Each structure stands twice: as structure tokens, then as C-alpha cells.
Image (cartoon, rainbow, N blue to C red; front, side, top):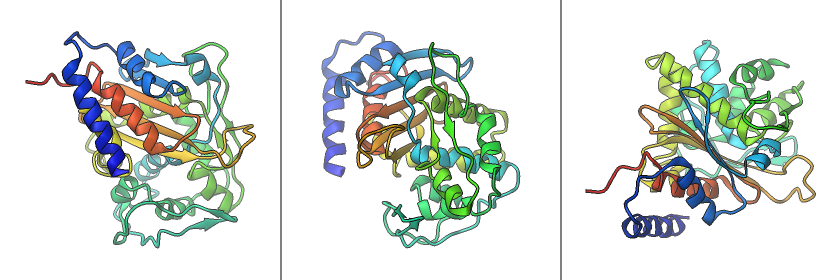
Length: 303
């Protein structure tokens, strides 16, 4: 992984040095990123007004339904901390091995001391968020997700699919749903819209515990944590990766798909970037996002 990240960093640096110094645009940045991943669905939204700034495979992004994986974690955590339902200072130990209803959901993060909420988000700890899910009553997950816009059409494209959500009625089903691996399928447009909602919450109450913890965890994740590959693009970004399987209706349950959803720039976000790869992992999607950031209007000019 580290060798792969280093190779991407070198290629990005070379590209930035060798290409003409024209003013970058979001459409040109998306087009450049799509060269490295022609199958990727990429969506860029303006946080201020919700308008679509650029996209790759917009029609497919509107119709693709896929399990969101760990990209759900910050949405649920924000709502629970904001409502006083979860103490972000609570620490939970992780043995890095987790099995729920016969499914292996082992953590991929390095061994660590018991984590608080910000650290758990940074490293996408499944054990931590399974404990969070254990506090939810049947039917409550829908109430937490609905206000974000994740479960409804966005109006950003024609012939949109609508999220498929089976409200979990058991403890294990709730854990699997919150971890984004079962019972929920969303489009890249819906996920981008939900993260825009999150960015607006951060801006409305930046000093709140929920904003501090979740925004900090997303920034750490895309800097040195599980989504760190996104930082190679040279733009400070906060964001989350997700890996899950299968896509709704997929014939091959073993094939995973990958997500990256980010807010950029990290300190004062102006754009939401969502990348969906039909085959791959979250780290792969983060590397595609890095290509996009490296050629985006947010890229700082080199002295």
C-alpha cells in the first residue's frame, strides 16, 4: 500500500510539473482523474448551493445503487453526538477481529489503545461503530439518516434511482446496516448530498462537540488515517473511504466496490467530492480522488 501511494505521489508531482500552467477547472480535474479510472463514477458538488460542479458518468452515478460501507459512520456519529446520545470521549478497545451474524468484519487499522470517537473515525474502527450501533433502537437508524438526504432522490440528474433501505429490527441487523454492508444501498449522488448536509452542519455550529469530533476525525482520516491516500493530491481534505460488497443485484458477491467521499479544502470546505469504483477498495477510490485534487481549482500553485 505504501509503495503504491508513493508511486502515485511521484506521478502526480511529475504531472503537475510537466503540464501547462492553465487555470484548472472542476470538469478538467474530473476528466483527468477519470483517465486513471475510466469506470469511476465521480461527483463534485458546490457546498454553498448544492449545484453539480462536475461529474464523470453522471447517468451511471444516478442509477448505481451500492452498499455505502464505512462512509455511513460519520453521518450517524454526528447525529448521535449532536443529540447527546453518544459520548465522544468514551473509549472502546478493539481486538481487530469482529464477526457479526456470520460475517467477518475485521478491522484493518494498526493495533491501537482503546479509541475515542475521533480516533475511531480516523481509523474506521468497525468494533467501535458496532458498539455505537448497539445503542440504537429498532427503526432509529432511518430517523438518523433521513435528514441527511441520503435516502431520497437528489434532483441532480434525470432517471435517478432511490436508495434502498431495510430498517433493521435486530441488534445484529442494526450493526451491519450502520457499518454499511447490509440492508442499505445508495447512489453516489445521494452520498455526495449527505456529505454536503454534513458540511453545512459543521459550518452552522463549528464549535459544537459533534462538529469538532467528526470534522477532526475526517481530517485525520484523509491526512494520516485510513483515507490517507487522498492527501497525495496536494489539497488539505477531510474525508472517508468505504469498502463493501456486493452492489445491489450483483452476480458476484465476492467482488468489492470502493468509495471515497471528501470535503475540500479541509478547514473551509467549498466542494464535496464523491468517488465510486464498481470494483476495488476505498483506498483505490481515495487515490482517484488524489488525482482529481492534484488538478483541481483548489490546488495551490507551486512557487
